[in-house]
Image 1 (cartoon, rainbow, N blue to C red):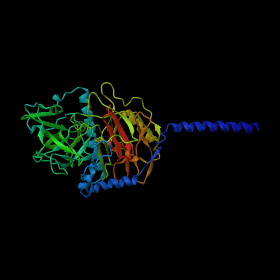
Image 2 (cartoon, rainbow, N blue to C red; image 1 turned 45 degrees about the vertical axis):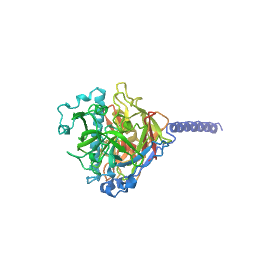
Image 3 (cartoon, rainbow, N blue to C red; image 1 turned 90 degrees about the vertical axis):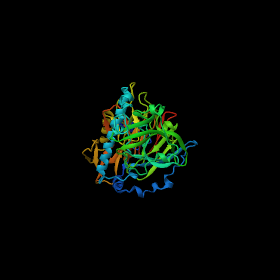
Image 4 (cartoon, one colour; image 1 turned 180 degrees about the vertical axis):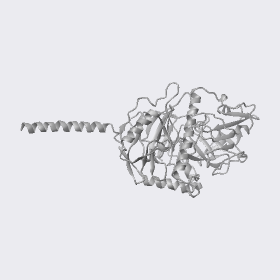
Length: 495
């Protein structure tokens, strides 16, 4: 009887210990975070194949009714929204296979990241714009056509918005870019213009077109400018070799039937070359004084990015507020550079478990180095090497049952899923210092790099101190920038 009693006690103690251990393990998991997600391999590959043969002219979003802007759901009377499209839904790719299309995207993306870092380094080292521009007294229009490195961040052209320019308004597709400030549009007469979906803007047809004078505050705010006959000239160069040169002017910008804004400063580009094919120009949504958001005095703006291989569309909203239930992160600004939107990223979890990394790894220091920005123009999230290695290793540890394959381009962690229709993968979550975390869908961190079934972990290391949350991780999530209250909200299923 004593032995039975001792065994019962031992069993009871062991049960309590195992129960505590199990509870302790679960306590490290977010109660709302599934440890694993389903990656739908077959549907991802079908979508990749579809974008190669997709004809933008067949898209219903091109109809006038669906391109008209709609009012946002905000209670604010000044709130409005405009359609937002993936590049693939507006411009038919010339690539014959998905891998070559994907690699071309990565090339543009790497160039963009390099120039975002260049822009930051110029600001940190106090390089003045006067050191970057040619002598105004010697400059000629044709001389401006030679690109110079201005430090201006560039748009990769992955997402387009539909806006009106001029009076009467003409509708144009414009690249959306939170990593730059200067708005510009291709203008007649063209010295050299690339192909765009809409007719090129004709200044003489607008009653509100007005050149900016050389002594104006708008001209002084440009990083690279010149003067000709008392009128301001601008030049913006981008990391992929694209550039735009022309007159700096003010114009009326309209947003469907929700009203218009007079006197918006923008570039009227007569010499524009590079990879902006399809769009008529660019909307700079950064934090600088010449950005669209600053000029229209928006208290907030938000967007939701559809999958880059999708023909669907969503909206770009202004003054709409942060949706209820959003994951909130602090919005921080640098004293050195006003363009970028920094957020307080504190870490990650994989499969519900916190990834171990040094505290403060993503902090911005007193000199302005470091930090994490949210950028809709960068595709692949770049993380400091130490943080990336920790995240990747945690993911690899929980995916040992998936068939691995060699790396592709900047990706070192890839899988051969050609024999799978769907797989279970550990959930990757972003933490912003609060109790909530942003749980990413599987397709936002395992992406196809060809049409045969190779999927790669969609993060990359960077030797720079600056980390960037790219648009692959933002897909399907409404990202809300509350400029008035210095917050950024991430809300899934709000597109």
